[in-house]
Image (cartoon, rainbow, N blue to C red):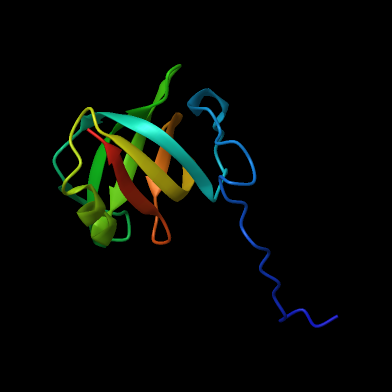
Amino acid sequence: MNPTLLLRLPKVTSDMTPAPKISELRPGMEHLDFKVKVSKKNEARKVKTFTGVEHTILEGEIGDRESSISFAAWNEKIELFRDIVVGDTVELTDCFVTSYKGILQVNVGRDSNVIKVSV
């Protein structure tokens, strides 16, 4: 077997499996699609990593009917939230979950998308 050969399996979409509930999310989960309501949206701000690289981050909170979780959008993905306001329902696709200082967070990554569903 050639160790340099990588096989990328097709991602599971929300059409094939039910969207996870916020309460079911765990660190390391990837390729998540779900419909949530935006309950908090902060202003974007600049942060510097421990290596000295500067990034822009937009943080807020999203939730389903049972619970809520923090979210973060980085750099160019912040633009996806330009027309999103608190109270909007959005579809998040291809997101992943991390834990920062013990707090779970949904990350809108480079392959993610955000679509406004309703006001």
